Image: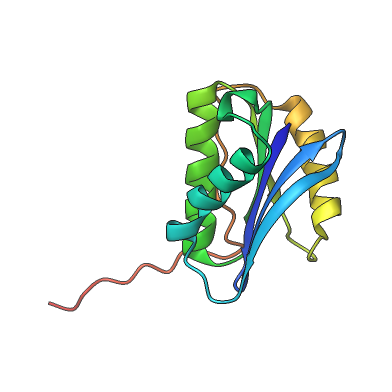
Length: 137
């Protein structure tokens, strides 16, 4: 099974299990949510619901952007940490020109995952230059 995470939408958090290139099961959270408080819980619930342990995952795909800054960073950090600890590949999907459907993103992610190797990492994609401000002295 492959874990798929999408935090690129401000009002939605999607966590899927992929089997045989299709969505096998999913949990989503719609509305005002805090990714930092809910992402790991949703992953845990999805795995428990399917009587799976994290060690049974074969790879992780996450949407890396563009999207809400903090949500993307959290999803990428969780995906990288899980993949590193489980020694499985991780792949990131950028949705630059248009919003892909989850099925399109999964297809693209599975293609990237076949080229990914364990112990590699992904980075968020913000689609604009960072704007870091300094406090006035």
